Amino acid sequence: MPLSINQRKDLRKNLLEEVYENYFKKNGAPFTQTKEELRADKEKDLAYQYLQEKGLITCTQMGNYIQIKPTVHGIDYVESLE
Image 1 (cartoon, helix red, strand yellow):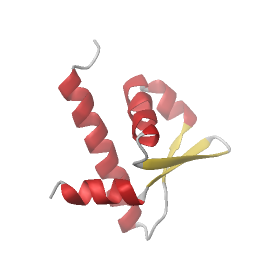
Image 2: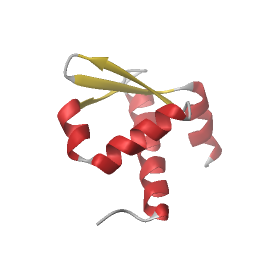
Image 3: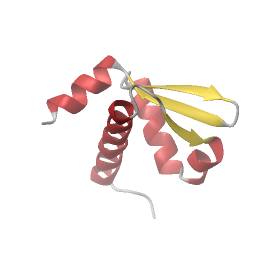
Image 4: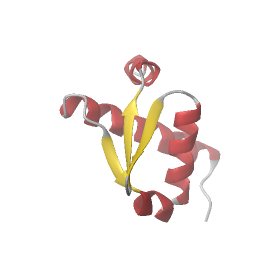
């Protein structure tokens, strides 16, 4: 069953916060997912695409992995939520 609009908003917010937390816990290291993991969850894949197109994250393909990092705008956005 597809997600509602509010569920999609929550998913994007939660994913961005996860990327943000990972970035600072791992001294700037990217959050890494396999391409298969992203393809397996279409809603998550679309959420990451949205966040990238909004300029809140960067996604870099490294072999079979996607490395995801927050941009300065993504960091500011997460910090504005507090």
